[in-house]
Length: 150
Image 1 (cartoon, rainbow, N blue to C red):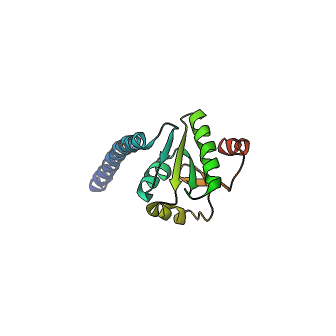
Image 2: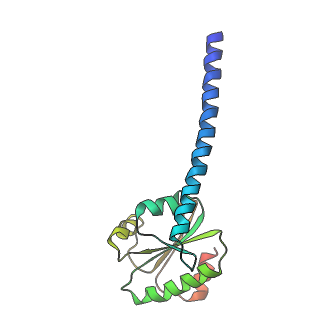
Image 3: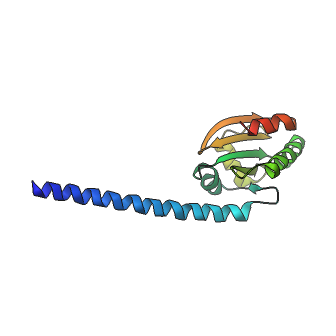
């Protein structure tokens, strides 16, 4: 019987060690994400992303509320929506991560395909890595602001 207790105690000890290692890994990962984010964010508090790996680490895995604008350089409505997006991002608190993805870039098209973006401009809101709302097409700034605040 004592052998079983020893095995159980050893397993519990090992499991406890794994938790501390996971916590350390999570802290290091958050530092890396913050460093990546500080390099990407522009004057308007918006991160411009063009790779699925960056998108996954900043939007999906980070767990922060995110507003992601999918746009194209060739689209006139996108110019208006990008201006709204920049204004809202500049005047917003830091609890929302603002991300722009230019679907004119070949490497960014993978992200658009993965998230079923068929029309631009498209604004997608993520919370803890899960999509919870989507706005497609040109809109006015009041609707845009209220949509992001949801």
